[in-house]
Image (cartoon, rainbow, N blue to C red):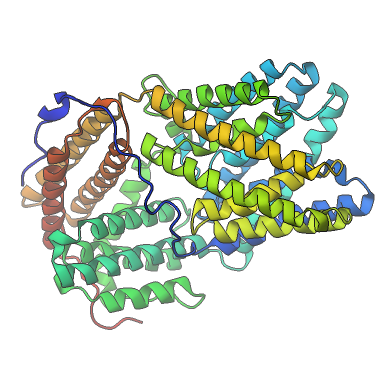
Length: 564
């Protein structure tokens, strides 16, 4: 087995810019498979306190309960054991950000100070969320709440009560998101394994039709989904009989990745359908043959990096996220100051717009900027159309806000711009909880801030360089080479047991997923050395040969034949 070649091309001349795409930016995708979980959760978590405040005649306080309620949008992809911890962290971060914003707003009304604090908070929220890979909706909700609170009138005496309202909303959101554990305790990991099975079936079908060499994209997607499913199982806690059955299915999916010609993609799809459902998890006929590989789970569980360690590493000196954090701080500050200079009364919208478009590279930032502008402009038009209805009374206002909450989660998975069509009027309606405002003035301010925030954000992404992107690819190549060397050594030793082979294979598979993620992120970056594309290709090919040989040596069963 050959290891990855040395990274000689990392000294190649700089590539200046990439062409920014327009085609396909507004194309719609299939809806996300668990969109309804976020939609129903946020409606319940926001609806109960909003209706309570409405009955008490204090709907003006709903902005603060909404801060906590919006935490219900997070962590639906995590198993319940990990969700309880992670969502508690999200809630704590939300309440802490709100408290800081309230204190700053009470101490000063200087727009220069408020914009600076908002930009720094947005950058910190971006860094933390990206480091721990919190998942959708990322830092956007945190930034929206903290930035809006900075520009809301406040006194120090009001801070404790408003923080308590937000904390109450957060506790309710946590309870709503954890409630399904009472009836379907293995739901998240079953969904993760189902995704892996479905992605593997798609790769096997394509490989059988066109050949494995022409299905590299589908193979990478399947490998990523399988890696994510293992991470879900590792975070799930105690290995129950259901989770052991899910592990067996994943072992079969991994074998199919490297022996597609022998695998039954129809059976994989059938397993995926049955795993998603509420019935028993399917059991392959040759479960006993995977026992040694399942023993490798304990090894990987000990190796797995905790969120706390990832956070310390991700925000330390030399972190690859620091250029993105700096972009966020600079872009949000410039957007806020320009909005204020133009006379807009709500510069925090420009801050939020700039923060929302920053992605892992300039090309994706541009794409998100275009989608944000289109979605916000359509959303403002929708707000103007719905304003007469929402202004009938406060009950209508609350119902409209909840409806847009639901619509945003139903649509945002199909394309970000489509979700923004609902997010925009929802955000505008939240500003009216205190009192109804002039619709035309709100609409004009939002349009100006959207254009300013998107333009300045894209400009900041282009000017604040990320020269380390290519170097990170070199680091990922080195990590892959080390993982492959270890797997090759285990493979070459005649007396290596299957559990050791399994541990080496999983390390190499994980390194390959990280390599592809790093290359994809760096591919859309500007102002850097040319990427070592040939070395990446050779490294991936060599690693897949090693993985295939390990699967053959282990004798892993491929998905074919009967199951129960």
